[in-house]
Length: 199
Image 1: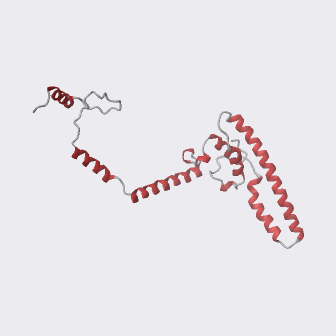
Image 2: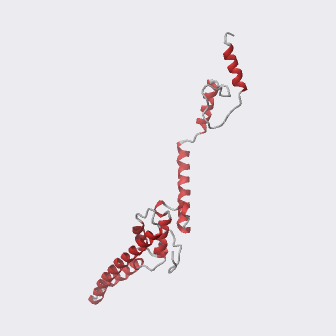
Image 3: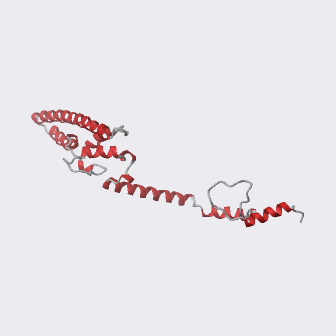
């Protein structure tokens, strides 16, 4: 009733202004293009949003399901070699090359476990000659594994410096040597190259 004429004109302009949903910042002097909602409407809208949120139990259940599906994807990636879902320690072209380098050759270290079982059985036999042979075999195996690891590390480092000169190669050699200690069929991610095949 006693409103000023200028306020009436602004209200009419606000009603007529087009609704703008763009992400650009709005001029603070310009009309916003929609009426301000009443307090009761705003509160009821906030309550409806709050009611649709999950309970603590539901949130925990959803988190468990997401974790389970991520682990399943990771397990399948370890079997297939899919880079997208591999664990962080196995990702990247440098790690892939290190895996392929180890998988493409025979490593003495991968036969360590079967040889250790044979040596253990020989050392348990109560024959002095067999026990001496077991001890000698043990020393030979350790020396061969150390020498083979040195050769593998030297060759791999050289290849990595040639192929990935500008990339981070930290830990790749140690990663490859740890892989060489595992039996081929037990390695994860599964070998993607055959023996003798160039990586």
